[in-house]
Image (cartoon, rainbow, N blue to C red; front, side):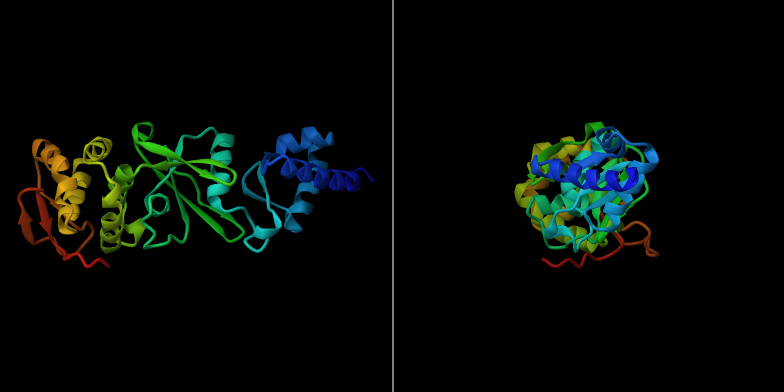
Length: 267
């Protein structure tokens, strides 16, 4: 009977959390609040998970799924990532295409929510929600800003840091053609001086490619400060498209770029 009672009490507990505006909790919190054994608490939470009232995007971490998201089978990722990262005590930021959307560049919608952390983690599958993690060196130096979501503030890379990451991880953003399209949209909100600061947190080759792309899409004024940084620091030519079989092409001396592929963006 105690396990049956704990299931009922667990439902009351999550209703209490939700009524106070709270939509995530840990398994330890649930066990302490229910006052039952670990096995009884786990059973109660598993039952509620199977019924669709809660979901678990991370070990020992649960989210409450309100009716409007029951078909999704989880909260949207931007609603729970801040609490999940706090639960694991991880420095993070939403980046790449996920960040670009927050800055108004919504040309390409990612199939998975993209999050940077200091060390890589296994992806999350929670209902129909997918979250992919990327390891970023010197993550504490990457410029971020907070965006409010219905469940709290989400840490997102700035437009400048987002542009830098996009050229550093093109295969995770649909390829360099798609990256060029997104950067063209981001360029309208990029601050040239902040762009140089963002570039200093990454390899110089990323700055070379980004500068070339900005000029390619007609934003020379945005790339002027970056050009001075590249001129002072770039020592070697680098391929525009890495991983291509073609390693030959025209040489752009200003950015020290070997244009081994033509960019074909939707701009």
